[in-house]
Length: 300
Image 1 (cartoon, one colour):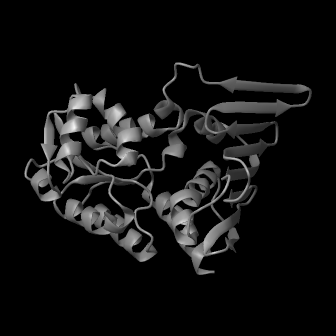
Image 2 (cartoon, rainbow, N blue to C red):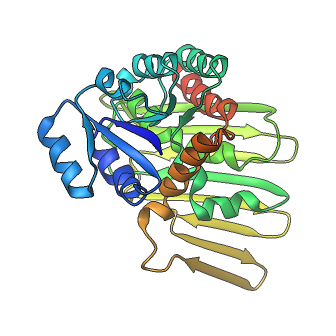
């Protein structure tokens, strides 16, 4: 049975990862790792995990096959490098790092050691976004994220929030990029107001908008093809439009949120790739591009 480490047991790990992993304990041996003994004990008891560790060094003594990294972004680079040098596949929350050269160097190290470095772009794996991706003959794509009242500094907002919208938009494109552009609009004091990104391919145009002061919390992605228009709202409903015909589909009430939001499919895809020595479920070149777009927006 493969040994899978989970490093960092904060909010994202507890909400999006541990519930999925708890249901997979007949397939994988999970090792929870945090310096907080109360948290280790409480979460192990809650989900029935039997292996816990205090530190990364302690985790490495059991020779895990892969580790999920859910620690603060500022710690990612050192942790990922240590894991890769130890021969361990890595899954890490976005962003891998906010320094593009660091991101590239970590992916280069993973490739040199024939290991996976997978960035947690869960929206690529959301079932309704997958349906958008499957649409042929795309021409115009919009990916929009709106927050009600903002509240994040510019760099944090771009790499914490806007990167998801950027990555979703780029994921939906079916042709190589030809031109890109964008800008950041700040709000006082030093917060992100709006972020805009545009891209063109031979036949497609992409517009990405992140609005931190929009009066509503909304995530919406629309694809216009040569035959129809389709919109996914908050990853939970899909509306298709054709002349004199509109159809909306939603998930059944019993469908788990982590399935709808793509976390569960991505976790399964990563672990399957580890087990089978398969292809990285989040293509490294595309992940690097999403980081590069965000870095360039901040550098303009």
